[in-house]
Image (cartoon, helix red, strand yellow):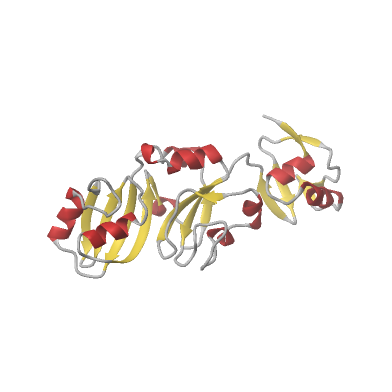
Length: 237
């Protein structure tokens, strides 16, 4: 448990600069348990604290861990170049908190994207040493063949890799769809592996990271949710 001044609490939760947070407090826009708190110097216990700012409730979180069902045509970047950034799908407070994507999904790839403002968590989850399996549904340009599946399981050679890369598992789901599980997380890996195996990826969706699945989260495209400790534990390899 820790105690912070009210202006620092608001700033830490992404409501803006400390000066702006002080003005919010002094203007009577911050309530706790239905009571206006207008002294920015007031110190409060942060554990279990619930703030109401502009009539919206915010639970104090030292760090945030988020799952987003990323739609197509959004970039996993804080400075997108050709498409909107995924942060546009989240409340503005998360931009102020420096929330960032954990890894990358291509702009045309949909599915489960983790986001956080916890630097060590982002680094750990992005590290190739963790070997966290990631599940993808890939729609192919040409029909799937047993030979294609066998190649992806055995391993295909990519131009900039020292040795072949293989899927952990690969199963045909439809005439032009496979479910493929990878743990390496290389750049454009599914697309490049399919190309190296003689096919082409027409669409790609990530449905799970570790034991955390989109189905269990119940998210629709463009929706997000906080992750609790039990859900975060599912990300362990």
